[in-house]
Image (tube, rainbow, N blue to C red; front, side, top):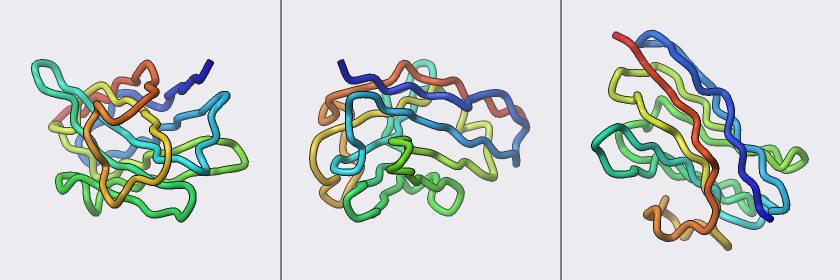
Length: 126
């Protein structure tokens, strides 16, 4: 059974940084599209970033460009989301997700992803 386990969430002040990790089990991230999504209370789940392990191409939603960086360590089968210059509006439950094949030049919507982690909470205070 595929497992995606996120970690690294927490509470920070605005301007701070956090690094989220997503460790995959029984799933090879190298050949697939790995995405990060977030969902704030009362809002739809939003795609934040995605990376394709086969070529390292990465994609971001406009609101996080220049602040967030998605990366992966194929040896550890783990994907990361480095979040800098955090803002209160970044507060949400963050999920790691996976779908087969390349990202096809975009993050995609949540329905396109096959596997999900349990989520890790990020809270940014002003």
